[in-house]
Length: 107
Image (tube, rainbow, N blue to C red; front, side):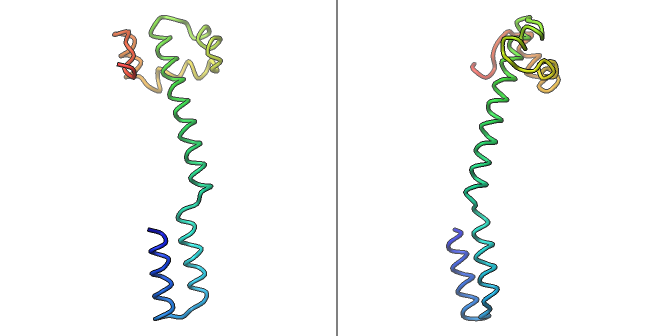
């Protein structure tokens, strides 16, 4: 798709405008639409979010089982402040786990 856009811009520039600077700028712009480094950062961020979500689920499950925050923090190596805010971050999931003792992600 980007190659088609780039080719179209080059065609229009050569046949109707003939401006060297415009062609260079358009090449830079179309190449910046897809940047492998940006894609890599996006993948890394997605992985981090997935890990964080998994940690929250573990904390909520442990809280639902009646474990205290200090114990959860000690066993999971998750900062106690994050353990304390987990139920407020995902209150519906926490309440579901608390009252059903089920894991909605795995059921």
